[in-house]
Structure formats: C-alpha cells, structure tokens
Amino acid sequence: MLLSIQDISVHHGQICALRGVSLHVRQGETVSLLGPNGAGKSTLLWTMAGAVRARSGTVEFGGRGIGDLPPESIARLGLATVPERRRVFSSLTVEENLRLGLWAQSGYRGGEHDLHQVLDYFPKLAERRRSLAARLSGGEQQMLVIARALLSRPRLIALDEPSFGLAPMVVDQVYDILQDWRARRNLTLLIVEQTATRALSFSDRVYVLRSGQIEHTGSPAEICDSERLEQAYFGFPSTAPQGRS
Amino acid sequence: MMPAMLQYVIDALSLGSLYALTALGIGLLFGVLRVINFAHGDFISVGAYALIVPSANALAVLYVGALPWPLVLLLTAMSVIMVAILSELMVFRPLRGTTPATLMIGSFALSFIIQHLLLMIYGSRPKAVNLWPELTTQVNLLGLRVQKLQLATVGATAMLLGALTLLLRTTRTGVELRAAAEDYQMARMLGIRANTVIAGALALSGLLAATASLLYTAQSGILSYQMGVPLMMFAFISTVVGGLGNLLGAVVGAFVVAAIEVILQATLSDQLRPFREAFVFVLVIAILLWRPYGILEAHSSRERV
Image (cartoon, rainbow over all chains, first blue to last red; front, side, top):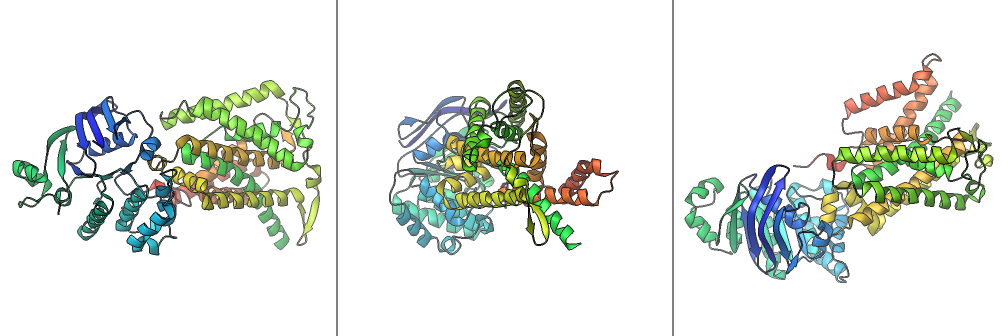
C-alpha cells in the first residue's frame, strides 16, 4: 500500500469538511476521486500534502505516518501534489518552474537528462522555456505543472482537477500525456475531478465523495452500473467505460 | 532651468535609492512571510546605533563607524542580521500560522520593543554623528555641484540592486526565494524548506537595512531612536504604490514616491511646504485609485483563468 488514509476528519473552523474518510492507493494504480463542488476533494488533497491538518485519523505514505510532517518533507518523500487552478510561478520563467521540480528531489544526479527528456516531450514548453510562465495559455500552464511534478520523480502524483477550465480537446491532450507517462514510468496517480467523463475511463478504481464522506467506491464499471442517480449528475456516457483504455 | 532640473533628478534618485533599499527589505520579507514588517525601520535604527559606543551620553563616540568602510558595512550588517534573526526566532516563527493581523501586531510590538531598547541603552537625546565626513564634500558634475554622498548613495544602491538581481535570477537559492515569495504554499509543496528560505530573506533584508542605515546616517548626521520610522513609512507606501508582493514594483514605487516628494518640495509655495507629506499621500491615494494593485501588479494577486 503506497498511500493509506484511515478515518480522517478535517475541520475548517467550525465546519466539518471531511468526516471519517478512508482511502488507499496501491503502487502503480490510478485512482480517481470524484464528487461535486464542495464535497471536500481538495481538502483531502491538501491534508495529504501537509497543508491542512486532520483533527483525527492517520495518513500513511510508503508505510510511514506523514500526518505531522510539513509540506516540504512530504514532497521530498515523493508525494507530488498538483493543486487545482494550475499553480505555476507566473513571475518565473518556464525553465525556472521546471527546475524547481528537479530540485525537489535532493541527491538525484540524472536531473539534466530528465529535463531534456521532458522538454523533448513537451515541445511547446521547450519553445518557450525562457518566457515567463504567466504568458503561457491555460493548457500550456497545465502541461507545465504536470511536467514540473514529473521532474520531481515522485512515487505518487495527486492531481486536483487537471481538466479545470480547459477546452475539451486540451483535456484530451492532458489525459493522453498522463497515460503516456504512466506507461513509461509506471506512475501511481490519484486524480480528483468534478466531471467524471475522462477520469473514469482512465482509472482502476473510483471513490465518490459527497458532503465530506465517501459515498461509493469500486471499479469504474461498478460505479456506472450502480449509480444511475449519479449518472445524471456527473454526466458520463451511458455506455460504461471499460477500465483502462 | 536645465541645471536646476538635473539637480532635482539627482535629488530624487538619491532619496529614491534610500526608499528603494528599505522597500526591497520590506518586500522580500512580505514575499515569504506575508507580513509587512513594521520593525524594518527599527532594523535601520539598530544599524545606525551599531556605529557608536553604547552609552547614554549626549556625545556620540564612533567605534564601528571609525573603521574602514568595508568593515563598517560588514559589522553593521551583522548587527542588523542578528536582530532580524532574533526577531524571527522570538516573534515571527512562534506566530507562524496565525492570522495576518496577528503577525502585523507582532511586528508592531517588535518595533516598539526595539525602539525602547535603543532608548534604554542610548538615551532619548538625538546624537550627532559624523560618519564619512569626506562624502559631504561636493564634486562638479555636468556643471552642477553635487554632494559626493548623493552619488555614493545612488551608486551603492545600483550596485546592490544589481547584485541582488543576479542572485535572484541565477542562483538556486534566488529562484527558490522568488518562487516562495510568489506562492509560498506551492513552493513548500515542491520541497522548498520554509525556514531556510525565510532565514535567507531575513538575512538579505538585514543587509539592505544595514546599507540603508549607513547611507541615511551619513546623510542626516543624527541618530535618534525613532530615526527609522519615517523611512519605513515612505518605503512601505512605496511597496504599495509599486505593487505589494512585486520586488521590481517596490523599487519603481520607491523612485515614484521620491520623485513626487522632490517635485512637491520644488513647486509648493513656502506656506504649503510644511504640509508636503500630506500632498504626497494625496497623490499616493490618487495612484491607488488609478491602479488599486499598484503600478506593477503582483503576479500572485490575480489569477489567470
């Protein structure tokens, strides 16, 4: 078990954002966490990243309790968080953004090679490596944060709404990239999405979070079969996706 | 007319340099701590008082200030950085994670404590000091008689800004500092160690404060326990005018505020001149109405959709 969250509760002031949530991700697995706006998906990610503290419950990563660690230590253990809304450093150049990813892993020597490999893979970023990240389009910024996370050679990447605010064609590109790199590096992914269409066909297992609690869990097919009610809400196609494509 | 204009330009540049050094120190710390450090002006006072022998006597005796200038800079910088790091350990670090208002009140308290420590050690009377008297002589520049000190101020600031730019642009520490200043949380999630970055920012802001205090003391020739307060005030509005959270903005804001001050000084009638600072603030408000996020808006203050 790479990531194991046991029965955590998180409060924002008086408001209970998560109550008794458990979730796990195995090595090499792709898991998606779905749910409507305000369900607590991002809170769960922030808690894993160490930016928010759980009031109770445990978070273990690689068999080690990380509930009390500061964000920088969790990142250095190999849990890369890609938060929503494409948090690029807009006053830094594209290359500086990427180097921050490289530096996240101390003591690794293959950095320059990795950087070239990533720049070869993302020609748009290579073209604009000296320009400010602020000048990139939304889609390019999403590529940048994913590339940055890849460069830190993480054991798990947690992505919060990678399709947020992107045109459908660009969303497809983003998922194609994830699929490519998943195959290349045997990545472990935890993907948070509001709209399920793309994430479902992409995942091995799915959790549905609503009002701070896990409502359903299972394979994508199971979720589709059992959840006619959810279907209207999430708007995924009536033909059930068949696991990984 | 032309020489007079040029004189104003030099005045504005040298005043702006002092503001820029102070504003950058404030901006660096704001970047990583998200607090306006109101004690920054007092860091400058500490640097100035470090020049003399501690005593409550009216007569100030230069001790550190009488050494060769590289040593003066080194020792004042060390004193200020020491106070800055003590402030981090005793005030800012324990208050980390509280609300911005709490942090701000903490920095106010720190400011008062430093002022009153200076008062206790050195007494309340302002002291005259004569730091680098050779710099008060004038040189001929393009038909103008300019004080060497003004040139030294502009030159030292330009050099320090250049070095700081180089550090921030080309070194790993610099890139990490800029990243942390823009989005502290994301920087930490990329493994950048928070305390290291904050200590680095404090050391840099201490170095800037020390330089500002030397140039300011050489200019004014007077030490007083509240000497840093007006400098802090104008540097603070400079950072706001330039765009809070944007380091280049802090420098631009500093020169804009200094230019306004010099222009007002030159154009206001004798009866109005005592109210110059009020007019400065009126113009600052006008600038902020025109650009609420400052002249150079910080990248992090608005998000891209």
